[in-house]
Amino acid sequence: MLDRKVDIPKYTLSLCLAPMYGDFERKWLLLAEVVEHYKLQGVEHFYFYIKDIDSYSLESRVNTSTFKNSLQLVNDYVKTGEAEVVFFREEQDRTSNEWQHVEIEDCALRSKHHSRYSIFADLDDRITALASSTLVEYIS
Image 1 (cartoon, rainbow, N blue to C red):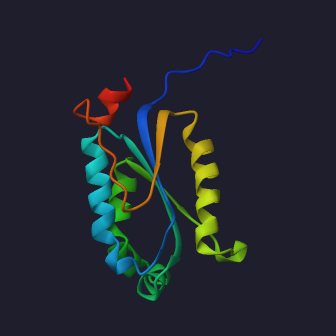
Image 2: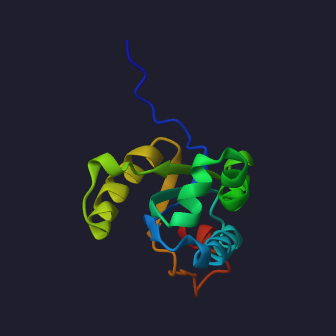
């Protein structure tokens, strides 16, 4: 006998962030801004996808202590359980914009069993609800 009841999801609202690539030194502030904005909107969990890190951060990944410092923001969100991070491997290379299709499918599959709703957004997107004070109130 199989129990086919849908469990109550752990999260009401999650955010799938489009793959980040290029010069990361300029993106750390944007990442903090987007996470804190969506936390105020009621998002409970985040999925970060990282591809083609700049040379500074790439060198930092090899040196563990520097890696912790350069990616401290991401590590802090992961440690608190607010986020998961996926690094795309260079062995499966494709153009940067094609990774967004991979991210969308991967995040839809990752979030479907523990998040009722998921937002798919870029680093520079900010969605707000006009009729309600937060997105969670709007969708509830």
